[in-house]
Length: 83
Image (cartoon, rainbow, N blue to C red; front, side, top):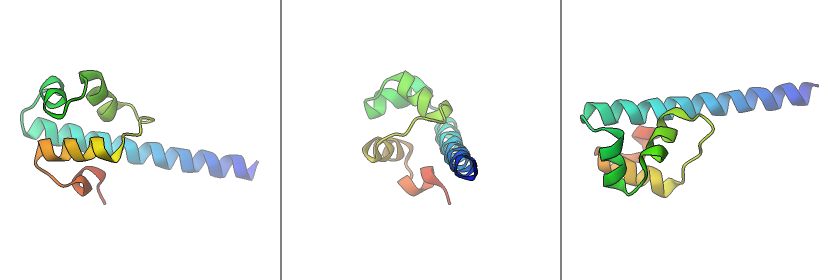
């Protein structure tokens, strides 16, 4: 039972971290007055993928995707990932 709880806690922390990353992407996108569609077009992704990055806490993007988004937003990848 303890192992199940530990696994659940780890999963919750991971989802919370992804939630924060998604919120950062959204905030940076909005600061640059870009729509999801505009950002998607700029980085060669679908609008649905941008939506998932911002809202789907289980979505785990590739580093290459994060690099492209960071470049399009004019920030470093570390700015997307946070502290």
